Structures are given as C-alpha cells and as structure tokens.
Image (cartoon, rainbow over all chains, first blue to last red; front, side):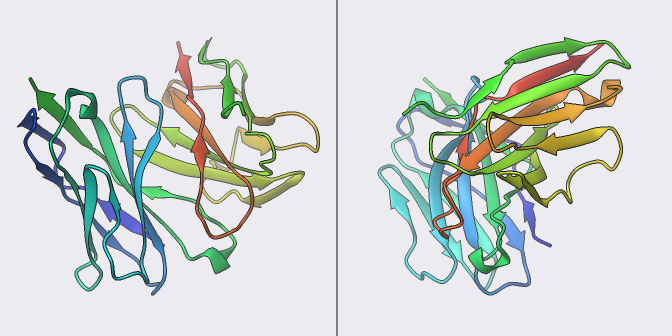
Length: 117
Length: 115
C-alpha cells in the first residue's frame, strides 16, 4: 500500500515570491507515479504536475517544478513568482505502477496555500 | 469535447434516504474512478470501474455503498440509508484506458449533505 504525507497544513507567501510545499511518501514499489493537484475554492481538481519515478529529471511546468528525491521518498513542489490565482489547496498524490492494472490515486491531506497581495 | 460531468452538484438527503450520484466520463473514456473527500481532508479512493466491470472496490464501505458503470449511460454511485457521516464531496475521474500515462480527468464533484 502507498501512503502520502503532507506535514504543512497551511502556508502563506507574498505575491511574486517563491514557495515550496513538502510531501513524503512510502511505497514498496520501485516504479510509481507522483502528482501534485490543485483544488481552488471551486473544488475542481486540477493536475499541476506529474513525475514518473524511474525518470531522474525533475518535472517542470512553467512556474511549477518539483524536487524529486527518490532515496528520501520526498516530492516537493516549488511555485515560482507566485500569483493570486495560486491560492488553493494543494494535494500530493501517488499511483502504483501501470502493470498493477489500476491507476488509483493515494492523496495526502493537503496544504492550504494563500498568496498575499 | 465536454469534460467529466457529475450531477447533481449538490444533493441534500435526510438520514435513511438513498443518494444516487452520477458521473458521465469524457467521450471515449471507458475507465471511471470514484473518490470521497470528507471535510478538511484529502480525497480517498473508493472504487475503480470499467464498462460493466468493477475492477477494484477496496475503498468502498462494505455496506450501503454500491457502484456501477453500465455499457450505456453514466456511472452511478449509490448510497443506501444515508447517515450523517456520509456527508462529503464525491468526485469521479475518467481516463481513456490503461496506457500508463496516468491521465485522470476529474469532474466538479457532488456535495452530499445528510440532514
């Protein structure tokens, strides 16, 4: 079974600054997938970024990047040049290898991020 | 291409009634996942279905909950004899197939309130 832990219930940062959200996970598999999802006040779940565990290179999507430390089972999200629209709950999630035949997501408890104007 | 549709968006039921939540996946998608989000918590996996098959229901409570995804029509999550603890947001996500790309598209959720 996979577990995902987010130890920062809330964070706030000034607009235009950089913020890093932490996530650790546990799995017995060597290949798996990791995700960051954003849930704004509308509650729509939006995929922010995805990382495949067998890829060494950290994933990047515009202002969003991850620091993936496989040995430490750590998967942090960095948001650069933060914007007011980044205010949301952020969930870290994991999924088992594709050969399990099931891509169900295991979520952490979330970090509530507030961008201050 | 319309996104994942869920209805109703809000559902109020009295204790003991039945709740039916519907999920219409994106066009061409044949896999559906249901998740539940209790207040102030993350989403928890409930069930994974393919057309006419339940693949994994390990996250579903053993009693009162059932799910189906018929050949035609939306996926249905059914909760019988609802209790206050069932109050939550229920999300479905659809994906095209087991390609290993891990593309799950989420619906807007149904917020169930049990009074």
